Image (cartoon, rainbow, N blue to C red):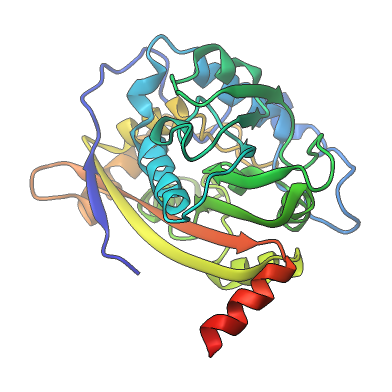
Length: 323
């Protein structure tokens, strides 16, 4: 694994009312039952309707780009892996595209036409400029509205960690790829925001005698290759990266995550955090993890994955390289 890279959070004015990232003010939303309709027996930990609202809200902020430094960084990492493949892709799909964090790093010599898909319609109102001709489609990553063997390339950056049925999402991606097509994706890993998670848990234990999850669960890297293989992908590559972003304090971490549309949407999230608990969490964060200059780090673990759909030519190439 590569050593953690550091980023500095741009200096932003703190908007009024941005005090709670991982909680929702409405108790009714937390009490609503999860919807049905996934694969038999699949867990549905996330409220997808709430996630759509969160992303729509973030996309219509006056300056949405201010909180997109992480999405841009990881989108560039996905684009770099696309550029490593010496071919032109006639038709590509960007799954969970947001405002176009991957397309901005590519050009028409690499992708001739791009279909951008996202669950939140507002992200397409402020898309980043790209020279690639694009088509925007509002759809859920778990239920792709495309025919089998449609795309030469599927990419995805920081979106799939919110799907309820990841194995099904991988199968759908495999299905819409043409033979010899490739999937290149990035998603958050299990060590993401461990500083925030531990600080909130310790503060809740101290002030309230127990704790609830405030940071959503993430897939383990040991499971990722297995899930991709079960979906039908071969010639797999999975690698990890860590990005550390420095912030003035805990509240700025939470503010920026909200601005990214990354608020918690777990069904079992706690609807309210008391003020004393939040202040205690901020103090714990600074005490345990604080930097010498007074800032605090937030770690984002990124899993990059590459998988190919089988084609007979792959066997021939493998035999040539084995000689």
